[in-house]
Image 1: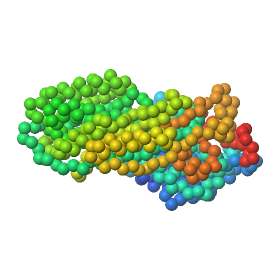
Image 2 (image 1 turned 45 degrees about the horizontal axis):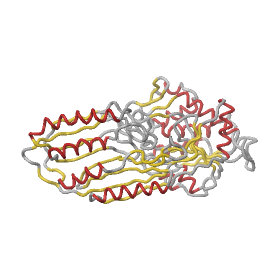
Image 3 (image 1 turned 90 degrees about the horizontal axis):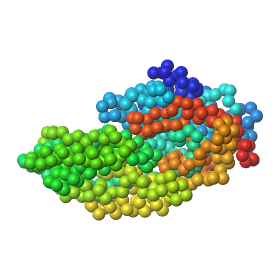
Image 4 (image 1 turned 135 degrees about the horizontal axis):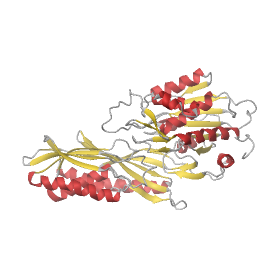
Length: 490
């Protein structure tokens, strides 16, 4: 597999990316990747700093004649989302990613690939180690824990970096320049429950909702994909309304920023309703396949299982079903000035029971602060109505677009000169680190771009090979054309 990927051009980028796939780096456990990048900078003889949380900064002087150009910070995050198919045996803290070339794409065997944001990190490393490229002062900023809290960006201190322009290399569509992003916040609703004994005239079943694509809860939220937690709730609420279902446990979703692909529940139904219950799954599966047209692989499977000793008390179970039923999910508002861009959304990410508690975790995103606050108020009111304790955490700011940006003007001109067309300028409905970094370094001129990545945060993640060539060439050409410190534009 190494030789397969090593043959791809530009080799200087792909060799770094392959090296990253061999280093376990799930969010919050990316220490080996931090050490790898640190040693990389030190071996090059460049000034290398590791801050108090694990962000790595590598500083490279300008090439001859470019000393008076504005300084550029090339930024990416070293952690990756650890998602795998249920039948894939993989330990994200020990095992390398099995990356391989599949036609025009690079993907992985049953797991996330880590191109988000490994390819951006690899490109920044390639610039730092290059000996034949022309550029002004360069700083590589490699942040940690972007995916589960943006800890690195939040903890970065002012005064550590000297540059004027931040190039975030964490976007996922070649030919597009991002100049704004959504802020976000996590919502946690917790139900306390008591347990009740198993009845004698019931049979136990395991319900499995599988086969969904999932995906990024910001970028993929407008697509017609299924949410496993919503679908499971429909199964449970329909059965409960008809013949009094009992719930032993539920486990749906795994990450706050991924659309849940799978949900599992253990329940009990009255003996006389077993056949009706089994047919219900078929009916609901058929119903959802008409709605979630981008998710034809949906499967709802009901299998008989061993009768558990206890069940969640009926009152709490009813409250859970109602709270999820009335919980907003998906796109809430679209941007008025850019009607194809999501303004505000929410993702019902995780529903999990255990140890006397049921936790419902969701992530809200918005580029408009007032809309985000209104949505959070609505969620809080809904869950508290049904007896849950609601807490908010991990809030991060958005990035307000600046259409008069110098780096935007430069990059539009470079792209047009090189490819004969103007790149699309967009605002992304996802939490780029730019919002947080810009709050710490308010004078930075910021932009985000990258090659084409599909299905990030899911085992179907893949990166288009030819777009990496364009991304790299565009980055190299832009660095040649960075304006002088006292001038505007090219």
